Length: 311
Image 1 (spheres, rainbow, N blue to C red):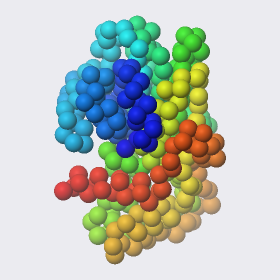
Image 2: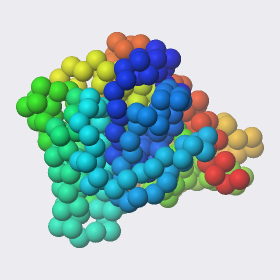
Image 3: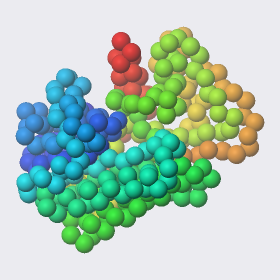
C-alpha cells in the first residue's frame, strides 16, 4: 500500500487519473495501489489504456476495463493526472527491426503527447529507464531502448515546460514487488522460481553484476507526492542498496527455508553495474516523508506474488 499520508492526499485530490500501459508490471501494480488508496472512488476516477481492449483485474478481483491507447484522446476535458508507463521494452528491441521499433514507440509517445492538452492533463509521470543513461552501451538493443527512453524524457519535459504543467520523470533501474511479469527477463524472478521449486538459486553470470532494488510501492509513493505538489519538471533515479547478484540471491534464499545459493565463477574482469543515484533518491524520500521499504520486505512481497501465481 501507499504511504498513508500520500494515499489520503491522493484520495482528497479528486482529479481523474489516467494510466497508460496499464497491463504491464508497473501498470498493474499501480492500479492495485490506486484501488487500495481510492476505495469506492477508484471506478469514478481511474481510466486505463493499453494496446487493446481487455479486462484487467486488481489483486482483489475487481475488474478494470482497459481501452486502446488511441481512445485516450476522446476523454472529456477535466483536471487529470497521467501515469505514462506504455512502451515497447528492451526485449522487443531485441526481437524487432530497428525502424519498426522506433516507429512503434514514436507512435505511443505522440498519441499520449497529443492527448494531454485536450483531456486536461496537469501533471504526468513518465516511467523511464536506467537505460537512458547508457546510450553508449555496446549492446545494440540496450542502446536503442535507452535512446528512445531519453527521447520520451525530453519530449514530456518539454510539454510540461511549454504548457506550465508538471512532469515527474523517473529512471527506473531494478524494481521489486507484486505483479512482476516476464520472469525470464528478470534475474530476481529467476532466483525466486528456483527457490520456490526447492532448487539451489543459480547465479550464472561470469562477471560481477551489481543491481539496486526499490519497491514499486515506495517509488510510486514518491511519484504521487511529487505529482500532487505539481512543481515543474522533477527527475530522479530509483534507489536501493547496490548488491552483487550473489548477495541478492542470498536475500531471496533467506526467505525460503533450506534453499542455498550457487554462484558461477567470475571469469570476466568486466563488471555489469546498473543502478542510479541512490543518495539523491533517499533525500527525496525523506523530503516527502516516504518510508523506505526494506529490501527483504520488498522481496518477500514479490515472492508471495509469484508463489500465488504458481498456486
